[in-house]
Length: 125
Image (tube, rainbow, N blue to C red):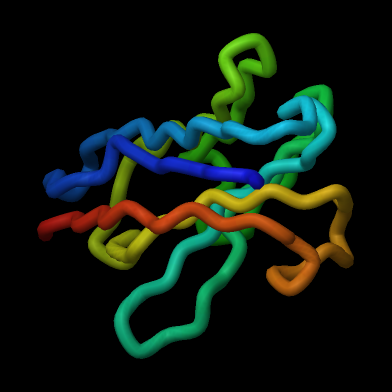
């Protein structure tokens, strides 16, 4: 049984920063999984924000967050992070972390097997 628990969301002014964390628990080693952060704004589809390979040596970002967000992981702590800087009102969404065994440009939402419950991020203008 895999469990993912996100934290770190909240209300922040435009231009501010937040760091999201997602703690993994499960029988398999955390380093077995590639990890992704997704977000879903009201009335919109859930979109990928960033992904990181099992070792942490490769990362991918949505164009909308490149240069502002950084995904990282600490396999010793079973945790993946999303550092979000220069936040904009359009970053407002529920943010989810997800775990899967695939990594790459063709990996979509459906290929992530496990999901957290989400954490709300609200950016005020």
